Length: 295
Image (cartoon, rainbow, N blue to C red; front, side):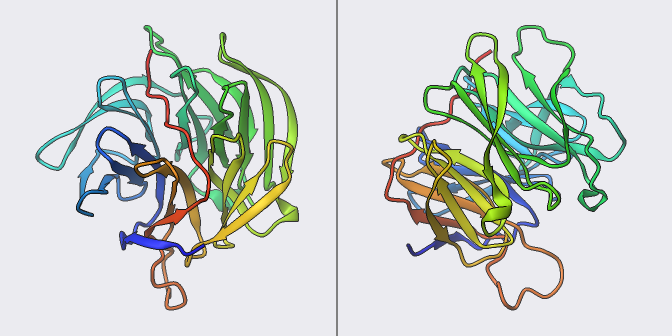
């Protein structure tokens, strides 16, 4: 299926695409640029806002603002008319080491916000990353609920919310796991290997789940997005004209368009001039709306 470039964004690390059905617009972040971007379906216009520190993962809040995993903790963000993101820190995090930040994250089907942390020096291969859950309601600390990750990624939830998917995209791991997820307590258990990505092209990056319960994972370094059935069987692979797709999200008028963000690496990109762009593919399936943060 043909991948359409919707914006030549040239993001250093485009991530965390989120579709707003109300606005008919796509939002995403560029992590090192500390920017939140918006693209409108109606007129293909784009705008952006700058934050005070790196923001890596976002989810809409029930009041139309944003919750974000950044460097020093989780923040509530408000996009201002001056091009700035006003930030209110909701809760800090005691990272295992210096020079860490949040990475992948989203809300579960009940509206709790999950986010994973990583060492910014990915090449170090340090398994100091962890997964955190924020439920609001006066929560003042952010304990790690899952740990021993290098680059936690690929977080997604099944349509009924009872399965949590999670990967580690570091080259030394490249695994995707499934967990049973208690929708009442918000606790994952019964971790098992879902897909060994060493058997497929690309490293597992950001993900989405469609209405059929299939898991879509961006295959970083391979320029592909793989769709796996709930049984872990590869169903199809879609190509994008860049090597490093990062995360995908369903959107469009009928939630049947798959939007994909990407990385623009430093150095010569003559063989992938659209690197860092945002793409749209007609997926052939329907996605699910993201649950806003509701606690």
